[in-house]
Picture 1 (cartoon, rainbow, N blue to C red):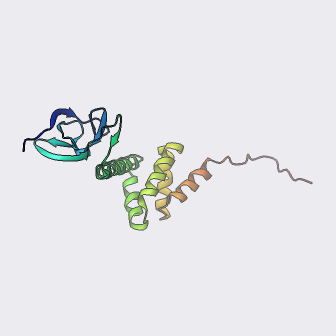
Picture 2 (picture 1 turned 90 degrees about the horizontal axis):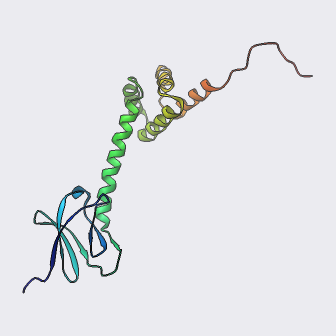
Picture 3 (picture 1 turned 180 degrees about the vertical axis):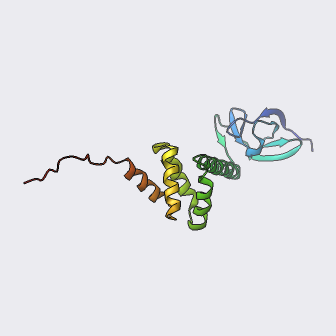
Length: 171
C-alpha cells in the first residue's frame, strides 16, 4: 500500500521538543540541536535521525499541545542530575586544596556525602572560602567530618566576644 505521510525537516529546541502543526513532540535529549525529519501520518508522528526512528507519538490535531514521552524526560533528568553532581564536586574542591582530602575522609565516614558537600559549598558562599578552609583544617585535626560541625565552628567564630572591661555585677 502506498505511504501517505508528510515528511518535513526540523530542528530540536532547547527543551528537546520538535514542532509540527503548532504542537510540540518530545525527543530524547541526546538529539538536542540536531536536524531531524518528521514523518506525519494520519494517526501518528514519527521522528527520524539519519533514517533511524528515534521517537513515535500519537498525532494530535489540537493546537499548542505538548505530547511528551515519559522515557524522554527520565533520560534528561538523569543527564541533569549527573551534571549537577559534577558541578557540586567542582565547587567543593574549589574551596581549598585541603578539600580533596576532606572529601575522601567524608566519603569513608558518611552515607550521604552529597548532602554534606552541598551544605559545605553553601557555607563557603556565606562565610567565605578562606574561613571554611580554616575550619576544615580544624575539623580534620579533630577527625570530625560533618557539615553540621563545620557550620557550628563557623558560627561560633563569627559571634562577637564580650569586650573586656570593668566587671558589672547586677544587684
